[in-house]
Amino acid sequence: MKGLYILLAAILITSCQNQSKEDLNKAKQASIDSMKVEINKQRVIDSMKTEMAKIKEEQKAESQKVVVVHQQAENGNTTTTTTTKKKGWSATAKGAVIGAGVGAATGAIVSKKKGEGAIIGGLAGAALGTGTGAVIDSKNKKKE
Image (cartoon, rainbow, N blue to C red; front, side, top):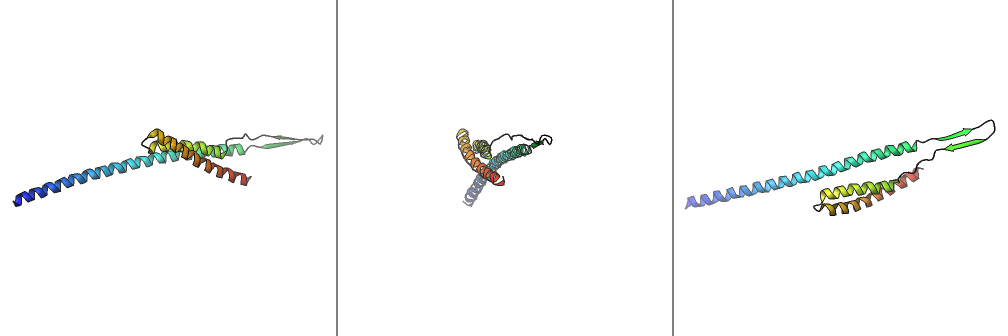
């Protein structure tokens, strides 16, 4: 009879160990999946930082245009020539477009329903980007 109890105890312990190994494997896979999502998010953030750096360089180049004043001393006439700065996108518009792109990409990556996640993420990103761009526009106006 003792042999039967020992056998039952051994079977019970063995089955519990198999269950814990399965749980451990599931936890490992969940952790790996979570890391993949975070890596994709970081890639999107890095690409947006690169785009923002390019935009800043373009804005800096535009702001360095020169106003030339010609004076003719002989006649007493003064001629002023100005190079008009090309009106580019406002920071609000840029923020909306960039936010929509990042939000759509992130929504598609994170959501199980890719299309729905992209739409919701795009709308949310556009809203946040518009708000951020408006803040930047107001700061730029204060500087001028």
